[in-house]
Length: 310
Image 1 (cartoon, rainbow, N blue to C red):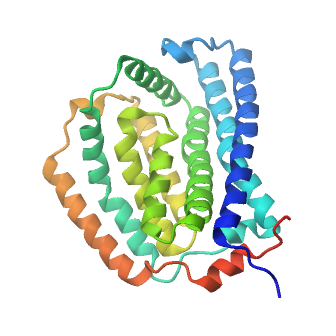
Image 2 (image 1 turned 90 degrees about the vertical axis):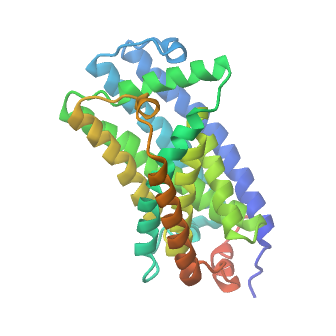
């Protein structure tokens, strides 16, 4: 009879393998990113100050560097950790091998949509929290970097921006945060899926190192986490995340402008946030009744069993 290891022991091995992979691939990604920027004539120091105005070639170099860096760091580290523990069954272990559970896709999409007013209002609330000078400078530099990423004057720029901000972010971040951390690592220590979803969402938000956007990004991450839990398919949050980011890129391209300070100038209506919150709670409550059960023992054993390394 095959020995099934305790979930916490498997989770610990996966955590260690993933963290080691993150460190190694972070270094590799930074080397590649820096090399691409230097080759394009980009001054690295300007990344810290936020004082730069790039031409089309440099903007493409910036996008390409981030594309490769993020692909290695997020998707690469997740796959490396999962492969170390689950071998050829790594896709099955995070539900990449299946579509959504029957009837679960509608509630998952609906929660994501109705929670967007909550995300918008929470972003405004988050920005009312005063930040220390160093954090404000970091936010300003990040905003300028994003402005350059979303300054697009041609179709090739649009395509690479969608790939970098939409596809790679959606695939890599969901594979690492929802698949690896939420389901396999946190799920190995905690029995409550609510705890794993919100903890993974907090990690998801914190890793962006954008203090003024912590709360809205955490709420967004939680809606993706519930979509993953209800549908039992990682493809659902991947596609939702990709579409969400991709639409923002396309809007920036069509309008020809992107203002990171727009949310501080356009105060969202409080009642829209309240309605969104009420609808989100209702949708989540109904979906939890149908699809919110914890992972059963047989399901966990089936995916924890395959050929662990000794």
